[in-house]
Length: 362
Image 1 (cartoon, one colour):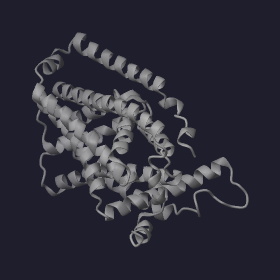
Image 2 (spheres, rainbow, N blue to C red; image 1 turned 135 degrees about the horizontal axis):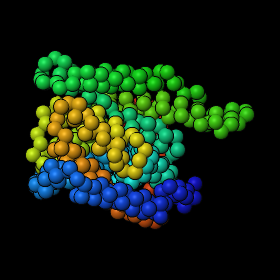
Image 3 (cartoon, rainbow, N blue to C red; image 1 turned 180 degrees about the horizontal axis):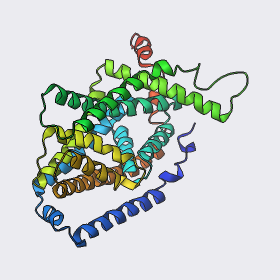
Image 4 (cartoon, rainbow, N blue to C red; image 1 turned 45 degrees about the vertical axis):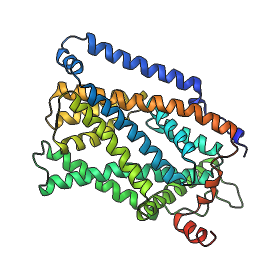
């Protein structure tokens, strides 16, 4: 397929993205107006007015580190042979799409699929490695919830303000991990993903087969990367989480708020679930999730709200701005270069098989 034969999806067109960016800006402007002019919010305004510029600068630097970690794990999962320039452009553009589209993260996924297909990458490889990517990046968060719940349980961490919340989410995270790890056994792919039979299957049957194929082999690929102790996967996935968590820590310090470390970690990880609400930029969902969990852990409301709003502003606009520039660069790259991601096509086979075949031939 020619690189120019894969049109950009309508929801990712520059016109649509600009409109979404303006919508997000309008919502943010309305929130700022409420904070500045709203009655009874004097305490909140005071926290903003006295926020430390140095800590806010540190928060921005941490967010850049988180965005770059996303690029690292993206390249490690999809194709370690891909150029860093193309990896940066796709990975950063995905984050911009996730920031401005109301698709619960599917906007970045759609952009990545389009860019990789237009770059010449195998469709089956894209499907299974997309599953592996989400599995590995989610695993960092889930594993950390389990670890911190265990640390509270054995007494390493003290003064848990809401044990039911801590242990409930810890148990749920453990159960989710077990179920996902069992996917390759529960969903063994049926032959090849194309369903090459005498009679051509219908669209629905083909979609179900492709989903089974991608889920089963994607999770298996993710587990193989973990067993291989890939530096890019481990460093990128945990760096993505840790740097973003550091943004929240820095904005807390900026407004003079210092929650216990265990509470900060669990409030961040549990509160992020609010970002699954399909609204532009997660505005409202992430904020309510983070503030709500902090309150459940008996942290002060006004200063917590100030810290969370500052965190979300930085977490939203840093990748949106950097990713918008990267998206423009990506379109230029894909229009000038013929199939820049085509070298990744041989990696459509399972990792273990690739290593057995590829190494002797080098």
